[in-house]
Amino acid sequence: MNSTLDLKEVVINGRKLEAPIFVSGPCSAETEEQVLETGRQIAKMGIPIYRAGIWKPRTRPGNFEGLGVVALPWLQKLKEETGLIIATEVANSYHIKQALDYGVDILWIGARTTANPFAVQELADYLGGKDVPVFVKNPVNPDIDLWVGALERMNKAGLKKLMAIHRGFSHFGNSPYRNKPQWDIPIELKRRFPELPIIVDPSHICGRRDLLAGVCQKAADLDFDGLFIESHIDPDKALSDKAQQVTPKDLDKLLSSLIWRKPDIGSNGLLHDLEVYRAKIDMLDDEVLRIYKDRMNVVEKIGEFKKKNNFTILQTTRWSEILDERKELGKKLGLSEDFVTTILKAVHQESINTQTRIMNEDTTSGESR
Image 1 (spheres, rainbow, N blue to C red):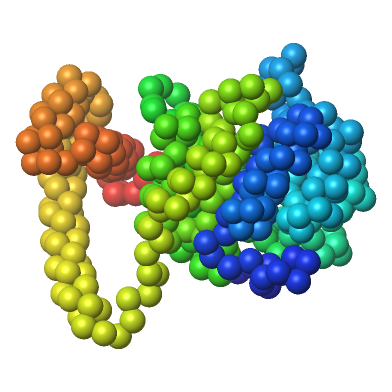
Image 2: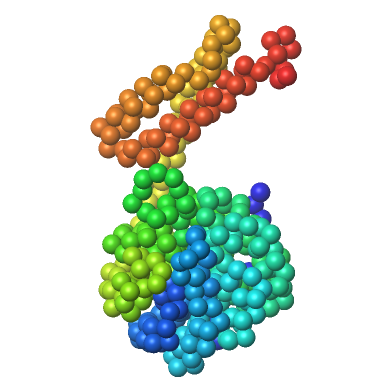
């Protein structure tokens, strides 16, 4: 179910955040020198927001879990010296109190916390009535309703300055990415809440600095509102996530290489040309849907045949043959294997659903049992 968010412009210390919004800093605050020197270089680049982890939720105990409150005065000092807007992750009311007491400007909710509605509600209850910007990362699992729910809980508590961070999703199997982007999910969030700023965290999506440029450009091409990216003065010596961090110098080169395209084509001749292409797309989409309808009509006949002859719905050998043959055809046609596989699996699942319905129909009344 779609809903609306009651939002207002994100203005912090008199500075209005406008796209593209850049947020950068180390994964973790490790030493005062590291915090200050990284921040000074970032400030010189004109990046307005400095991020640093104070409390780090790690998958397994024994890994570096952040320095905690001892690092907050370093962030406060950096803010006073450079005018940077300071952001850090919080996961409980103690974190929030300490962060706000030391002048942290922005709080962000991490992926593990977003996945727990109880934890999110506790944070929302504690933050109720406070005029503080809150950034909400997507949950670790690809569930858009969990993401939306976290945003709604914050909003219902009276928080109006909200922003979403897309950091990719956990997955099983091989992938070049630490967390799969699954762009369809943040795109759907953008469709539901066009007024909600959404920025992309390529560091956690990639897990490797050599993949950052491609994901950053993809974020720009898809008209997201900015980047949330990790930078460290000496990434190879970082105490957490060193493989995905870049030096401020390399970050500057990366950001300078990006192309941020126009979101609005306007009313000139270009719009007419685009509309011609869109009309062709609409026509082809209509034709594809009609073809799928014809296909499902055949599936119904197959379901009736299987029911009459007491055959199982799932024919594994046949499904494997279809998958292999269609992927090979797709390759010859220049279509990616992921695209073809995704379509085939969706069609196959709908076919199973249709045949299951037919199997469960009462033959005498035509009604489901």
